Length: 285
Ligand SMILES: C[S@@+](CC[C@H](N)C(=O)[O-])C[C@H]1O[C@@H](n2cnc3c(N)ncnc32)[C@H](O)[C@@H]1O
Image 1: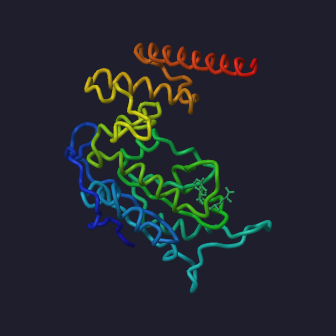
Image 2: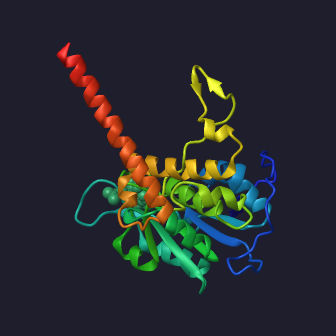
Image 3: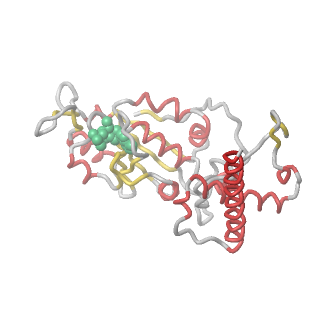
């Protein structure tokens, strides 16, 4: 078993408040156990940047376990052919059961990355960041013996595609969860980013104020904080409506959001009418 935290994380630490649970009390580190046949896959991604910092600051502890240590027989076998025939090997239940007998505690949440699981999204990440002990099983091959599913608490998918194993999905989940831990990054960043408020994030700009003829919206350089806040909310609504309208379904808009959304819809309609007018104009020529 290896701990992953990197004392050599190179990014400077941001100024953050002391870690605290949602009730304001200090909380112990989130403990994460990863069961994998490829422990080396976790060293780089979890040793650098925010995940590395989270561990050096003691906000989370990640332990990576080689599943093969619970393998069977002289060859430490963990997989076998599928009953009924078919391509590929399937993870056997015995090594997983034995590993969980050792690692599972009353406060554990055992997670199986699986393409058929609940789609992992920001609300689930927030939920998992509040828990104390996560165990993530990373299968390879064709997947797992069906009886393994009864040993886990959650099956999570990272999207409608198939990866070679559970390691990258586990990394996606761990990274997402870690940055939500109190003290990981400044609270304002996570409060405003995509999905937290149910909207996509507004467009961001940095210097230069003009780049190849494209200028930064004047509101953002006005220094008028209330106007900037309103602009950002309106643009978040516009972007969500344009790119992910399903996120707005069933979302109760505040009075201000409803007003800004009305403006966005009117602007979108006007732009569409403008385009149509231009098209008719050029067709008539
Ligand atoms: C090659 S995949 C097995 C796919 C399986 N035969 C199927 O058709 O659903 C091997 C492992 O990678 C992980 N995996 C692959 N794609 C995933 C996804 N989109 N989300 C979560 N885990 C995934 C799962 O742990 C899976 O058991």
